[in-house]
Image 1 (cartoon, helix red, strand yellow):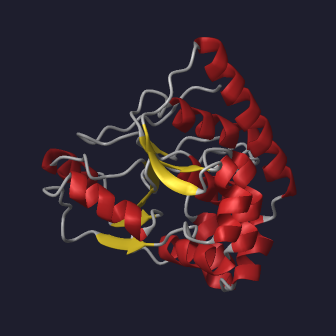
Image 2 (tube, helix red, strand yellow; image 1 turned 120 degrees about the vertical axis):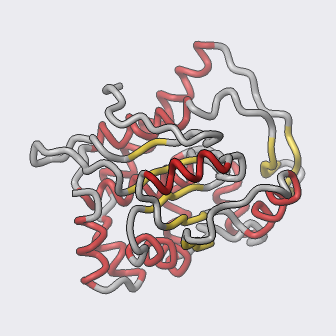
Length: 250
């Protein structure tokens, strides 16, 4: 895995990273300070938000569904963010949709879910990318863990930008490794057919490497078949927005 070029720290932030410094297919690198990715932002302290504003952050694109947002606010009722930040809630899935649960439920933490997820909800993905394109300036994209939904959206953006596929996989791997020490949360239990609270998993070093390897392989296979510009046209984004997204990290 290549070196992390732009490590980022906002006090309290979880699994945070600047998407700058990634290698492009023309030999250049993505621009820093344009797009960040992270886990849920509720733990960010007032100091951390001040640091984010100092770094130029103007907008937050939240990929969580309404139930997750409510749960996070119930757990951290005092969490607040600066009022000057534009926040857009743009989920990538419908957790109550039986078809989604049947198809993607077993792979919610895996890139194997990306292809069916994007096929299932074009209108939701249109909302996500419109929110990123219409942000007034630098933007933070996040879900709960900052791994798979965030990884799916940022992989599409990075692919559109022209980032090398191995570098996109490296970025996903860093996010995946950044969640291996998290506690439990809400997950979909396929056998019970319900969303349940779980305590998290503990993996040996070998198990972790196996999981990283299979997820990288699935992500790279998905990227080979992905035409991000064609997909964005399909979901209804206009050419100026697609052009703006392609240039966002350049």
